[in-house]
Amino acid sequence: MNRVVLLIGGNQGDRALLIDQATELIRERIGSVVALSGIYETEPWGEFDDVRPQSFFNRGLVVETTLSPWQVLRTALAIEKDLGRQRPHLSPRKYHSRPMDIDLIFYDDLVVDTPELTLPHPRMHLRRFVLEPLAEIIPDYRHPVTGKTSRQLCDTLAR
Image 1 (cartoon, rainbow, N blue to C red):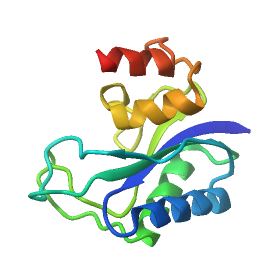
Image 2 (tube, one colour; image 1 turned 60 degrees about the vertical axis):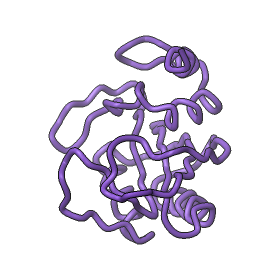
Image 3 (cartoon, rainbow, N blue to C red; image 1 turned 90 degrees about the horizontal axis):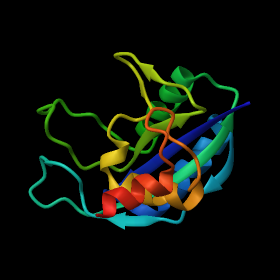
Image 4 (cartoon, one colour; image 1 turned 90 degrees about the vertical axis):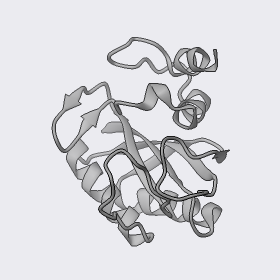
């Protein structure tokens, strides 16, 4: 059994309902949810194509799965699509609003760097909306590259 840490979130539609639906689809298609954070409301991060994007709802999950990291990624993308995500062809430096986004943050202690998948998530340490839910559900988990715990990464970002 493998342990994957996911961050789910969106800023379109009924955000709370979509978070609940995504959580249930993850249970059905990826594996057993063994921990989940509360829902965090955060301002959009990065440069958006929307003039005034709505705030995001985000939740962290720890899931036990028999799927490979690449199977988890493909399944997560399918769940996003089922919940209304469209991936417009925009400038690669801009983000866009979406009903659901599912990011793979960790998969056990695996380190992967391929065109399709990078683990741990390459920008997680820069994003409060990732680190706060992780500090809640896996505060003592050590990042396999930096060796810092989720709590330490979150506290460092707070400074």
